[in-house]
Length: 485
Length: 95
Image 1: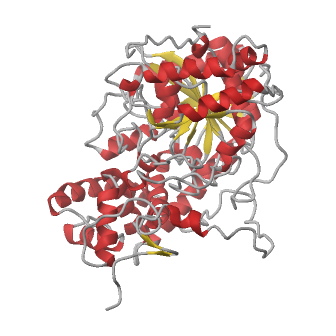
Image 2: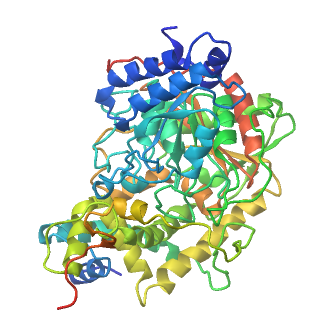
Image 3: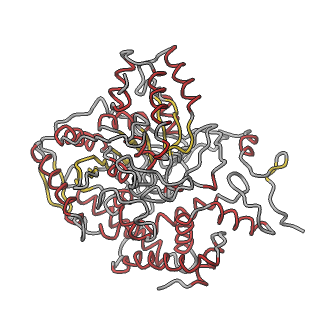
């Protein structure tokens, strides 16, 4: 069973069910991999003792009726975990140990999984390369000089390096889909409101959404089924019947209408991305789908809108870090105000401070109409573009990112060039829609590239089905040499 | 528009973040390039557009006005950097 860890989650679940492997053996195999992969810097905290205990408990009394029976999972360190340190990649939460469990992780544990550790991420999920983490940058298993994407970079790297059978991330502007694309894995941002935000360290509350990151589309459907569902504790949680995505997964997509938006062909986009898109269109067409040219005219305004809305919400959300109730507190300062100012200055990193300042400015007296109100209006136009298109098509196909994984340090001195990496992912968050990033090919350097399927609100099943059919016919295989161990 | 150093110091004051004098120049440069990017939105006429205030087609639920939680003082105080029995402790505010 030496190769158990490079199998998919569904294969692993099968092995557990048929007793080919015990939960303890499986957990030990992942622990060994993690200990050999310290160079990748994917974990902020490991919970090995607790995981081994849980594995033994499962083996003594196996319950194979659950979706995630006996499986250890590492999760992004943005999900609060009871009695396990939760940092959000920030110095300001470096000593924070929640006394509660996030709803999404609780759902995973209620389905038979248990915690393996907490994965590195950009500080407060603000970044596209995992370079803003207080705990150092994460390395992409694809190459030792490459970023794993962000903000869920620890998650994508750990998954691709076989350090966890599946994982979860959060996506505010592309933080699941872009790292999935950079590591040749599958990532889904669900419809806003499908997965509870309760117990997730908040970044931008009208955009944040948790979702699965997996090796296959089938795994993605299993994880989504386990983690989603109505939660009273999240006021924006959608109250609807729970769906069985994995059971309903079908690869017949004949007759489905796939929209191809002309605005996603941007200036200076590498030819390879265009070719990949063409390849994706051909695969879907050969499977009997109908390609339809559509227009999403306000696409180019999505990023500027996002960089008003997200920092504005972040500046409000991050006001809670005051050095009084939890988290880091500076010892400097002669009075309360100076204590606040020093705590926040020492506790937050540069990118987080930049975004708090942008947010504070656009919400400040005299500027609100010019920035925040304007952004809310443009957000309406962006949503309307999608609403109009979805009267004509079932789903939309686009590239996931405008490039493959870039070099560590390549974009750190130019915030706007870093932001441009999310050009294809951000519109979906502004419109609250679900979108799936699928590995679809390699560029000439051998780095993975992804395609994105965007669905109507709550139409996750359809994009999973299209992705499932696509995956079977794409022939993509993620073969990563384990150079780090 | 452009942001000058004084404006940035004022915003930092509002956000309760002390800014290192040595970093003000690079911060000014970064924020100005970001705002230049953001201000592309001015190309669009949005006079007749309603602002989007919620992405969901549902209004916020209200729950019954009943106590559903509480008596967790210890848990709440547990992560405090400085506490005194049942209180958070802050630097002196009243002489």
